[in-house]
Image (tube, rainbow, N blue to C red; front, top):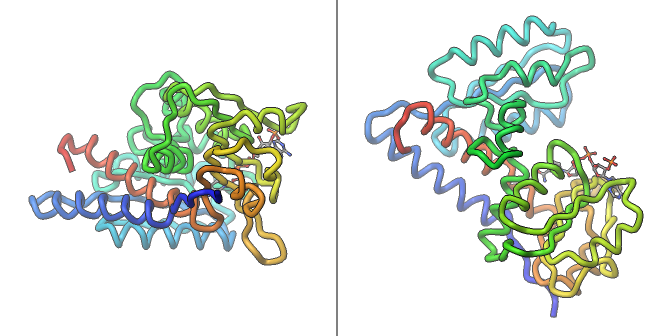
Length: 286
Ligand code: NAP
């Protein structure tokens, strides 16, 4: 039987509606709306598109967005100065620095300058550490979205064999940690993994985040597995995932499409994290 589709568009929209309702309630009670500052350095067209989409999603949810578009020649000190101002700004609950930064800027140092209480991307070392030891934190938006997709699709994680392909700080590693905290037995694969198929074949939950088009094929997947495709690859102008959808959907129990799976969850989780930052900072339930 072909796999059931996990509809990230619908699940993402439901989360955005939940956030908008909570914001409307706070504003109706006379409180200020949450605020998110997005910092973008340079002219990278895809980054401009991402920041525009994030700002639009904020506004639709009633969250104020402050866009800081800086020229590529911005200095390290200049950018750190802006972050210090945003850290102090009472109207700003959440700050995101759009990556990658232009060459010459030290991303690690910049991310370390964020107030951890406003770091809604979860990139500050303190938040990374808190995630590692399973303490409340901001979970990076894409991994948080993956867990939300699994939860809202009724997937049992406790005791499940979970395999994550890709070990980046942005996606693979935090996803593996989240699955581990939920008591899955987790295997993390990467380019030096000897027999990738031997691992993926064991997975009841398989997350593909390698950035390699159609890396995971039907023959590599266990019958009935839940397959989450994080990959976004543009091949001949078409967006395709890390999973060969047709062959994998024929064996899997549930599967995310590309586009329309993990992608829409990333912005939805950014809004959710912004609401969380607001709630923690104002000490009020939103
Ligand atoms: P990344 O930093 O390039 O990391 C890729 C990881 O995959 C690395 O750990 C790499 O291993 C591993 N890998 C690459 N080829 C492999 C192979 N043949 N076999 C096993 N492992 C392999 O990428 P990323 O930032 O994690 O992103 C991964 C994908 O997700 C990309 O397509 C990206 O566009 C997409 N993405 C989507 C969203 C979304 O919202 N849907 C968000 C973020 C990223 P090594 O460590 O050994 O090099």
